[in-house]
Image (cartoon, rainbow, N blue to C red; front, top):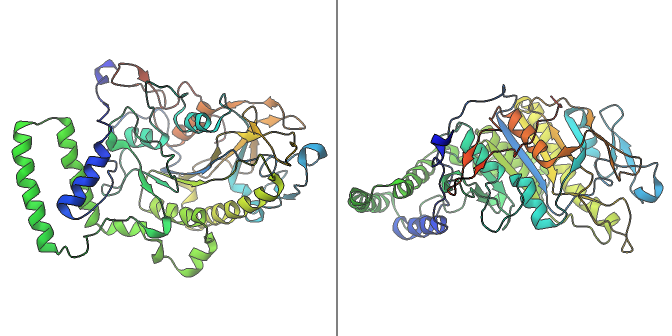
Length: 427
C-alpha cells in the first residue's frame, strides 16, 4: 500500500481561482474545476447502488419533531403530532405527509451518535469522518467517492453540491480534481459554461489555438503533474461545453407539472436537479437545506422547514421509484446532530449529539424498518449505536467501495474513507 503514498497530493490552494480566472480571461468562459477522473480500486463488497443523493439538513434537525417522535412522552414531544406511514409501526411528524407515503422505502436510523456538539465541527465530522485539525483539511464524502469509484460519465463531474453556500467540503489533501462542482442556484443551471456574449465560434477557436501554442511551449519546459492538471481541466471543461450532457443541469427542460411537484423552494428544485444529474450518471449529489438551528420557536419553525423537506424529498423518492431508479440510487438524509428532548425557555431545543436520527432509502436498503432504538424519551441509545464513521461506511458499502483502503496524505499519514467505521445491517 505504501507504494501509493504519493498517489494523491495536495495542489496549491489557489488552483481553483487560477483556473477560473484564466478561463474567463483567455477563453471568454468561466467554469469551475471538476472531477477529472477516479482512482480505480478493488471493491470490498458487491455494490447495491450506483450513485448517492445526499440530502443534508444544516443546523441540526430535530429528530423528535420529524422522524423519531415520542408522542407518549408528552413533556418531551411538545405540540408536535404524529401520523401513521406506509410502513407498519413507523410514525412520523404530521408535518411530513408526503414522506409518510414513502416510508416503506426508508430505513430510519434512530440511534445515531456524534462526538461533536458544535455546528462547524459537527458538519465537518459528518462529511469527512474526522475531527477538525488546524494542520490538515480532510476530503469530503464526494471527493472520496470521486477518488475510489470509476467515473461513470466522462463529461460530467463525479460529485456535485447544490445549495451548499460556503460550506462545501472539497478534496482536502487529495488532488483538487476530486473536488465537487458547486451549484448555488439549481434553477440557474451550470453558469458560465457557454461562450461569453460576443465570442463567436471562430474567435473562440483562435483563442484555443493560441492557448494550445502557449501551453505546448510551457509544458515542454515544465512538464509535471500540476501543470498537466491545468490542461486536463481545460479539456474536460471544453468537452462538457460541447456535450449533450450539459442539459442535465437545466431543470427548465422538465415539465411544469414535474417542477411543481418538487415545490418552488431552492431545496425542492435542488432535489429535481439531483434526479437529473443521477440520470446522467453523476456519482454523488448533495442538496442542502439550512436553518434547522431551532434554539428558539422550534414548534413553529420546524413545520415550515419540514414542508420544504417533505415536498422535495417526497417527490424525489416517488419520482425515482416510478422511473425504476430507486433500486440503484441510495438516498441519504443526514444532519450534524439532533435536538434535546428537553424544551428550553425559548420554546426551542438545543444541540444534542448523543442520540439523533438519519435516513437511508433505495440503493439496496431494506425499507420500512427502524434501525437502532432510543429510550422512551429519546435521551439515551438503547440498541445498536451508530457512530458517524459507521454511517458513512454504510454509504461506501452500498457503492461497493473499499472503505478501509488507505490513502496517504502528503505528510505520509494514512487515511480511509470510513475512519474505522463498520457498515450497519440495513440491506
